Image 1 (cartoon, rainbow, N blue to C red):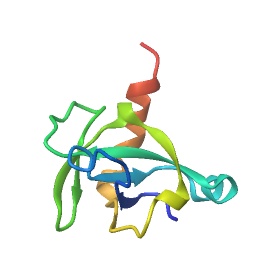
Image 2 (spheres, helix red, strand yellow):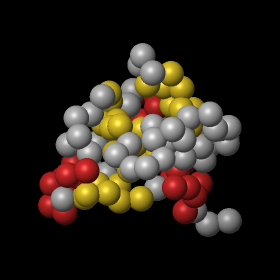
Image 3 (cartoon, rainbow, N blue to C red):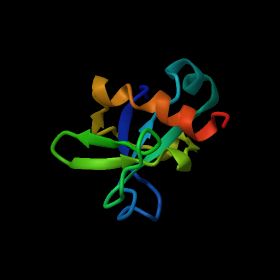
Length: 103
């Protein structure tokens, strides 16, 4: 399992949240058996910095729903269907900082 891999959502909300992107460091994931993911929402409105648009090649654009970040057991995630582009990877840290940062 690699950081920035994109997986089909194994949960019940596949229509609203078709994909999950793994954002956790590979070293930590290999030790815990879980990974931190951010849902990729379909048909959602982007929010500046916190919920940017993310492109999945051949699938379209989705909103990185950073405020819904959670951990999931890696056994629930099957084969990744894509990996996040370098440009979209650069959107993750500012989005997380926006959600958990001080105001």
